[in-house]
Length: 212
Image (tube, rainbow, N blue to C red; front, top):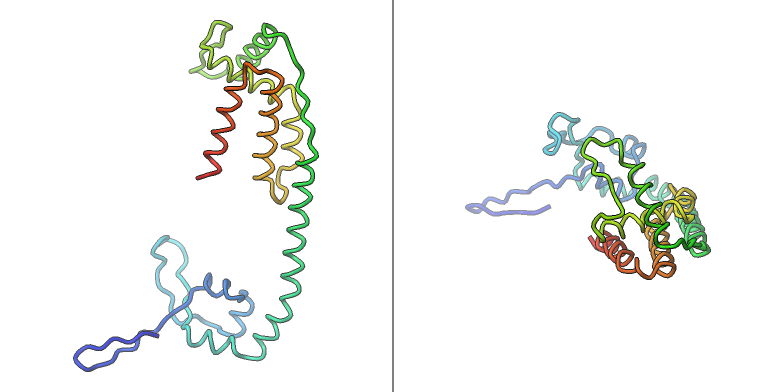
């Protein structure tokens, strides 16, 4: 509580906690219903006025409930389960990291003319149904051609798609995506030195997204 004085009169301001704040303190919906019951205030949600009202509980009532034997016993009983759940998540994350670290990227090497022809044909087949599509050609802008060559090799000539599918939805999948893509780009740059600058550009784009 806070106090303010106006002309010698002290006003006590009641502090409230939302359900979100309660859950951050270890409360569950069942505990809230059991130990607190109805909320003390239900103001309109200022962010979603058409949604349900916000349930607020006085901080004093919450603190008193948290001091009860029942609340303390439930929290003590939940602690091992929370620790086990955390350990399980970390185990799954480690499994994902172990999979990624064991990934071997093999890149077939085509003659320059063949790679360019394959990349152009793949790009045109992939995007040809769009009304705003401009056909790629072997005489297109060099930077554009380097980009579609790297993309062709990455998607069609390595295990990139397979490895992403293996880690999709797994704990740590976001980090796995970045690591796999970086590994594939490095392997392409090794196999095709002339595409190294484009591989570096794509890698830098990923790092820029990760930094935001």
